[in-house]
Length: 453
Image (cartoon, rainbow, N blue to C red; front, side, top):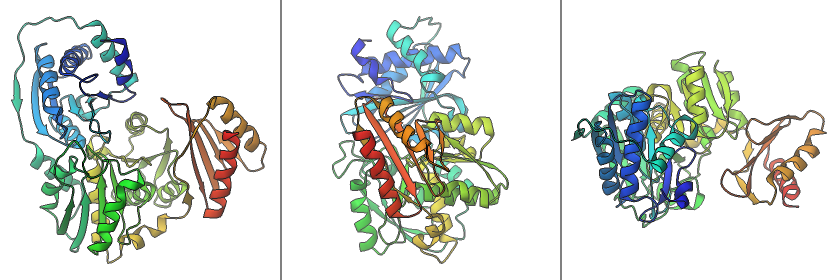
C-alpha cells in the first residue's frame, strides 16, 4: 500500500477518496487482511457485509468479499443497509461485519467500518492497526478452499428487533417529517414507519450518493434548514434528520427548533432507568450538565466518557451500562449489542411523545437547564501552550476544579468548559455551558481571546 494512503486508516474506521485511495484493489487487500486478522483472534469464519447508497459501494463490497473468501471464510451480503442495520446483522448472527460507507462525508469519499462478532467495535487500539499492517505488508495466503458468498435481506428482521425494544403500541397519531438527506434512512425509514401509528412526510428519501439537496450531516445547522421549514409548513409534531449512513439522529421540535442532542440523551436516560432502575448510563464530557442531573434524579449512575465511540463502547462493556449518549448524535444501547442506532433513538423520541399529550418542546423543557455554546474551533500554532495559558488563568479561581480526561475541562459552580485539541488538524475545540446565555457568552469570549492571542 503506497505511503500516501496512510491517513485513510482513521481512529475508528477507514475513509478516503474513491479511485485514488479507496479502490477495488485496496478493498480486496483489506478483505484479505480482515480475514487474516479474524483468523488470528479466533473469530467466527463468516463475515457480514453491508453497503450504503454511494455508487462505488457495490463494487468495493464485491472486491472486499472476494478478499475475505480467498482465505476460505464465508460472506453474507445483506445489500443496502444503514450502519446500525449492519450492527444488527452482526449481533443477531454472531458474526464479524464490514459496512461500506463514508457516513456524512461528501460524494467523492467512501470507507469501511469494521466490527467483531456481536457488533464489538474495531478501532486503532483494538485491531485496526493490525489490519493496516497486514494491508501494507501483505497477508500470507494459505488457501485450502475458497469460501462461499450468499445474500440475505435482513431489513424486516432489523425492524422487528427495533420494535421489540421500544413500546409503540399505544402512541397517539403523530405527524413526523423525516429528512434522510438522500442517505440510508431513505431505505430503512419506510420499513419502520409502515408499522407505526404515524403520518410520515418524507424528505430526500431517494438514495443518491451525490447528495443533491444538502450534505447528509445534521450536526451542521445549515443542513437542518429544509427540515425545520417542513415541520412548520406541515404543522408536524416532530422532525427527524439522519446522517448518510443513518447511525446518527437529530430532532427538530414542533416549532422548528433544532434540539440539543443532550436533551435527547436525558430523555432516553430517564426512559431506560424506568425499565432498569439503578443502572449505569454513560454520557460524554461535552454533554450538558443536565444529563448527569437527570440520571441521578432518576436513581441511575452516570459515568463521564471521553469523546469517541470506541471509548463509550468499551466503558459500556466494562461498567455494564444500559445506555450511552454522545453530543454528536450517537446513541448506544446495551440491548442493541452496545452499538449506536439513530433509528432506535428516534423511536424512543416518538414513543415518549406519543405516550403524552405534550408537544415535543414541552416534553423536553425539563432537560433544558443550561445554555451550551456549541463547538467553536480555533486554529492555533501550539495547542498545548494555548491550553496551558487557559488552565493557568482559571486554576487560580476559587471554587474551580480542573481535569484532563479529554483535553482540559474547567468546572465552576453553574458553568463549565472543555478545550480539546483535534487529532488531525491544528485546532482547539471549545465547548462552553452556563446557567444563562449572557454568562455562557462571556466565558466563551474570554477563553477564545486567550487561545487566539
